Length: 373
Ligand SMILES: CO[C@@H]1O[C@H](CNc2nc3cc4c(=O)[nH]c(N)nc4cc3[nH]2)[C@H]2OC(C)(C)O[C@@H]12
Ligand SMILES: [Zn+2]
Image (tube, rainbow, N blue to C red; front, side, top):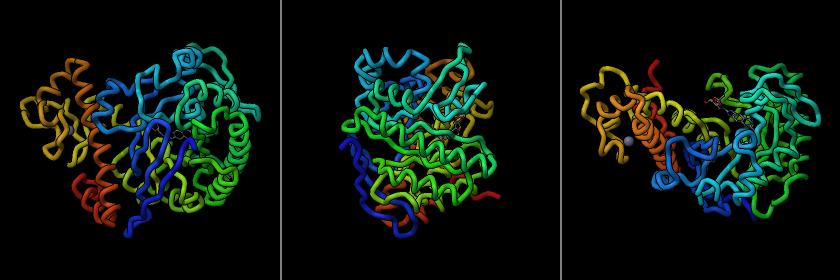
């Protein structure tokens, strides 16, 4: 079996679950946060540092690797694990979202999507079969079905037609899947904020019996209360014995609120992206370390953090590096932000074990400043 989910327990205070996902490249406890490595690298981090951070699964991307360096090169290299020297688990997104978020001149047909390469401008075509061929070449442990992530907001009629096409595309992905023995394929639930369409999408995909399910079409600009409401009426339609993955979600409050609503896996570019402009996540909220107020601050980014960055480097030093555009500065803020989110998910799992995730949420939100009006 490529991917197997082991349900361990549900938190008594909330809908959060403790589980383990087993993959051909190792097992990991859930809920978990997955660092994003779009171009076969989690920007500025080495595989050894990712292991040191206890990152056991990372993301990469069909669309981006198809364009550069080309999936055939990665196939010849022996697959993505070998190419990037990463022996943990890898999940690849299918390109569905990237085509819609990065490219213009999109023409969506039943067969697939015609669009323009966002780098060279050349015309390209991506279909369920092509997306599966690329992911088969990459050899990721978890592959995503090729779907449409509709723009937010979208009309009911547009969303209904899109959900029905995404379900037909999911069927085609299952047919085109070459290695179900070593690669797990997740279906992606769509439907926007329409409860009946989310139910229809989930039921369509569950009837195809995927080894795992993603909730797509969120973190696309909708307010957080809309995301939370959509999760509340979507996750109950997903099987308890399969992993649930909320795509593109990464702020600390959304991770906790997603876990509370039954989500097991999360990914987002947020921690690594904001690190590269000198913004850090801390137990007291965001800290923009490049700001002048930290020029003579010789304390750590976060005095409640035990990461090697907070143990060995000061805000003043990191601010200096960032201001001088020194790569090492971005490595320090990235390492700390990834540690912060990975450590946050460890605390969430601990709270589930002790049936107190609701209390943990209140304490964390208070400290981080989310409850401030
Ligand atoms: C907060 O970071 C911004 O928000 C985007 C992440 N939000 C997101 N929602 C997603 C939905 C889907 C989906 O429905 N289907 C497939 N296949 N993949 C998806 C990937 C997704 N990622 C980041 O993407 C950009 C770079 C636009 O800004 C970031
Ligand atoms: Zn730290």
